[in-house]
Structure formats: structure tokens, C-alpha cells
Image 1 (cartoon, rainbow, N blue to C red):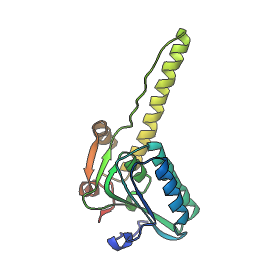
Image 2: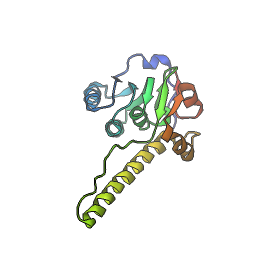
Image 3: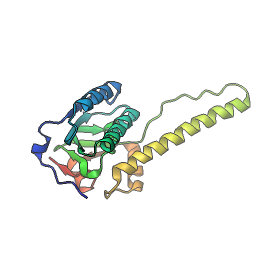
Image 4: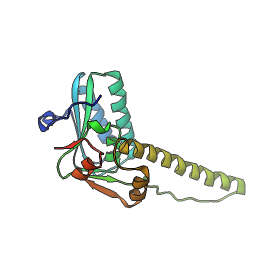
Length: 189
């Protein structure tokens, strides 16, 4: 069942206001505000971010999912404001498309996860193989996690996984109205 379309006045007093880098400080602010949020009704989570740690974004998203299961009377809704880049888009993907809203002019940015790692191979050959395999497994697991998030983001939209995988390596910027027409968000306020 589709929830009713929300209007600007529904976003007047967000229960959770977050801005800045997605990091452990944001996570702590998020958790503090989540504890104070009502136990019933609409819970607006407003976010503006230039990105950050995707694993922190996933933790916040899992908290929303978990608390939605614990308290079915709560209706968590995402409101993106100004910039929702990288880890912010990862967090937004945890919300069903019908619970995603953006303010006018907001930009989403989607990109592949990045890895900055130096691989040093030194020692007996068998241990060298183990080091290379461990790094390969790390990359493969990160790609799986990334693609799970991509699938959540595009579910119910007009964006295909192939389209997203072609654009993500080059930082795909999506303006709010375009995000709405692609079906990535419910509405633009």
C-alpha cells in the first residue's frame, strides 16, 4: 500500500536534522535524535551532506529499518536538502522510494566506492598469494555491498542497474526534478 503524498507542511519540524560529513560524529547525533523522536507517526529525517563513510551511512540506514520493524506505528521519511552526495545517497537508499523527498535544487551524487590501499608483496611466495587473494576478496566484497545499495536506490525506478553501473564510476549528479522523473524519489518540495 502506498503512503499518502506528503506536502511541505508535513516537513515543518523534522525529528532528526543532520548536516555535514557522514561520520561517527553524525552517527552519534543521529542516534541521540532517534532516541528523542516520537514513538508514533511521521518521523522526518532531514539530511544535507557532501558525503563521507558509506559504512556509517549503512549503520544509520539499518537503524531506520530496525526501528521501523520495532515500532510499526512510526513512518520514517527522508528529506534531502541541498546536497546528498555519496554516503548520503547510500543512506537515502534505505528508505522506500515512496518515503524519499528532496527540496528544490537538491543534487544527488552517486559514485562507486573508492579504495586507497597500497599492496606490498614481500615474503615467501605462498604468503604473497594469500596477501593478493585477501585484497581481491576485500574488493569483491566491497563491490557486492556497493551493488546492494545501488539496487536499493533504483528499486521501483526507471534506472537500470546497467545504466547506474555505467554512470557511477564518473560521479553521477542528479538534480531533484530529474531524480523525481527517474523515479528515484517520491516528490520535490
